[in-house]
Image (tube, rainbow, N blue to C red; front, side, top):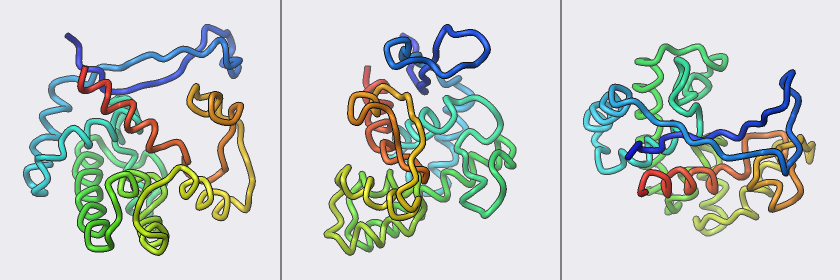
Length: 189
């Protein structure tokens, strides 16, 4: 069995045109064993080895395991996107997730709030904690709406198409937690 470790939605359309919702399909990626081992080792270093599947899911959603900045972690350091090497990305991505776990726990934020904070930034943990610390899609949507000043962008992901016809706010990804859970489910198969 190939361990699904990333996801993407692609189309057969030429020229890179955005696909219509009905033309969009789910395509799983497989994380290579070397990448999985690098993540597992870094998780041990950070003391979060029990969260290795969470880390795999983050990579699945962030990059599908391709490219250098597999955790898309450069922005958590205030750097421009995709500016970390693979090793630096793994180190920073795992370290940042460990920090979010610690901070989220201290604030009483649940696991899904922590996942969403990986995408939105750690300020989301405080926002969530002020609202009881229990994640809801509505909370994530409200946060993104405020940060984006209600500006929307097209988002032809099947989850978004099903939920609202195919858009998200122009800040982070309000569907991030659903994407993470989809990745975790794929890891369990």
